[in-house]
Length: 252
Image (cartoon, rainbow, N blue to C red; front, side, top):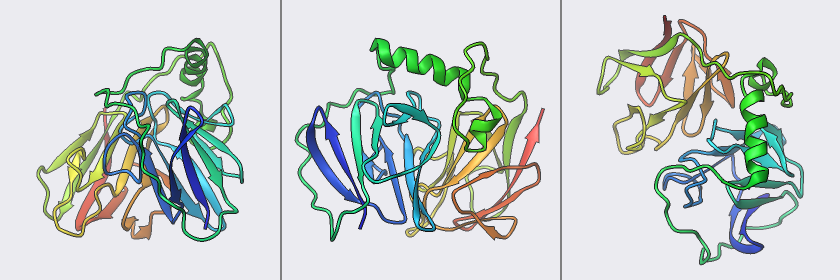
């Protein structure tokens, strides 16, 4: 089975079998946990799409890079090197059998909230990222086109999830953060209740075009159709996730 090999400063920390879905981030509910302040809580994910494996950035603070190029969505090829913070993930598509898991002796100390990398090279990459992130072609998953003059402008309207049915802590949830989570995790905006609910079912990311829902665990329906990968939410969409029925709407 394909695997990713987590490395830091040329030292192998762990190997992970790549199944239908792998999440990468600083929080303990991820598959690949990188306990470093340069890594966002839910930084990126890898999921299977047919015979391909897709890497998708979850609107992380410091961005995700493949072979030193910033990506928002990338079809992984054997030998690709993914950079998350200062850690590297080598994608080995030709691996056979189960991946061996080694003790992570070289993990970095917990640095609390996400920080920005302060290397000159990364500052330059971040400047390009901020200019390109809001381009429509990036939202659609096409390669980033860097426009150094562009200014990121978040949507003026705020998305809202209204609870139509099911057990919830509120009657509605404002999607004001860059990324809002639905799941059983303590970090989720919309908390799912029950033993067998996924810790993180869906991530809803706010971008220049609106809101994008990405499936991270379990099964979610949007307008009675299974959610696979990412979906650009539209006013009036109905989500069914973990026993909750939620209507997405946009308010000015």
